[in-house]
Image (cartoon, rainbow, N blue to C red; front, side):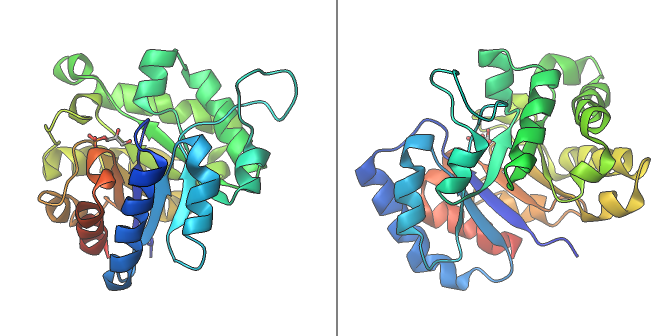
Length: 250
Ligand code: 13P
């Protein structure tokens, strides 16, 4: 059985004050969330404070990006051991915003994936097609390429304890969600791709959906066989909405 995971990606949002209020809200309602694992991925500078505020709560902490390097002269970068030092358990890797805005390619994403694991944390590997790619019928080709880059560099077993997030780029922040059927089709394709190399890994790896998932549409998406949770942007900034999604997953 794959334990559902509901992860908030706060992106570059929040302040000390707003984050405290958000976490207070999440902590108050987390008791009703049954079986799902709940994760918040905070901007790096807030991770220390978030970890302290979540001390004693079942909610876990993650980061949104990290360096592929371990230490040294890399001005402005943050390493896996630093994130781990502050209680991070998960790191989002290869988010489409990092691929599109900061030019991260498949090879760099594979290196970051390895660095997250080497630092003892769990990578959340984001994959997904643009609208143009979907309309030209290459969704599966794109997603396969993004996943294969990691398998080729790290081997299939590296995926067994990892998380994959399918985030169609056209659904991110647009209010336009993939239909449950569209999402399930790609999730099943991803699991099939893993299964070509290892049925065991395919059965274990959690595949999350991300892209305008919210309190109103989460239950339908999460009801699909191969959707093991969500990676939530905008709706993760509102405690009640985020908790509604987490309850739907549990
Ligand atoms: P939204 O939920 O705001 O569409 O963002 C999704 C996302 O990019 C999560 O990583």
